[in-house]
Amino acid sequence: MADASSRATIKPGSAITARNWRQYRQFMTFGTQLLWSGQYFWKLPPDAVMVVGPTIPYDLPEQYRIDTEKYGGQAKLVRQADGGYLLANYVAGLPFPNPREPQLGEKLFFNKWYGYFPFVISAPSDGLALDRYGNSYASTSWAANYRLTHLSEPKMPVNSPYAGSGAGMVYNVSYVQVVAPEQSKYTTILDRIPEDLQKDQEFYVFVPALRRSLRLSTAARCAPLNGSDYIPDDIYGFNGHIAKFAVKYLGTKRLLTMEHETAPLLPSGRNDIDTLLMPYYYEPVMFPKPSAGKWELRDVIVLRIDPLETTGNRGYCIRPRILYYDAQTGWPLAYDEYDVNHKLWKFHLEMHYPVRVPSGGHIPSGPIGNWGMMWDLQNAHLTLSAPVESPMKVNEDAGLPFTDPVRYTTPSGLDQIMQ
Image (spheres, helix red, strand yellow):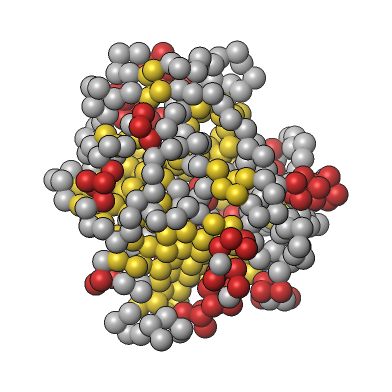
């Protein structure tokens, strides 16, 4: 890929087609190049076009910059006995404002891990799963995500009281509930990441047929998420046990991505989502058409993430993961996933739109409420997620999730489902 420090660029208004895509491949992930190459079942049609527009920066919330100036440089990496790293003395803002060697990869990874994220985001989304035989499965989910510690919100403490205290403090919680189809309705996944990253994540699932929740094994981080091609560790580009992975910095590059998509929101609960998407996606590969928005060149930090050979990581499913995250926003834009034999298995692209933060500024939509595509090359399967009805909402704009966090961040809250 082209280095961000190079003069390599693409003029706005350029059209990338099947005839000229190779001259622009230095701005694409390996997965996107394979779609253009036509050597797998998932491939772009001969008339596919990517229209390039200008690069538009985000006006990120001011409090995160203030916290970076206040606390930046205090954080320190602490090496663990198995070779992994944890962070000490971190409060809020960017942990390493000017990261350098040694352990540059780990420092950049913690910058991404603790990048700006609101107290709560909420959004519904439609999902569409397709296989090589044309079979499709549509679903609708509603999700909320909470960041409970190290907050940069003007009207909130750094650590929310909902995070708990002491050894039981929780850093982040993801809540995903199926809304449709009817046979899967109310199925809910709860993923809790502890503040102490030496501890394992907590996975719970509410099973409607049993009318109760079950705690899952930590191996569930590699299980399909609600029947999709995603796994829990895919959230935010990487949502795994950070201290059990080694990170290598592969460079700061330039990537074609759709950060200001313009495709309309879809009505929810429809089983013909593939028909609704036809004006905006090439079928069956479900790659965005020019009608969905323009692509822009953004600087991305590229990391290679490999599981350490610890007891909790033996047999881990992704080896390695190549993560591309936005150098300005810290948001994941793409990732490639390899199997245990180091062969490319799946790859993912995200498309975002700006979302208002009530305290000021904007962030990209995601990891819920955005357009995202996951292609499984080995099994000729794919999953597409699309925003529906209303855009992603943040903090006070989110309504109920903002006013009732206990229900959506604790296992006891799962007991309120279907009541």
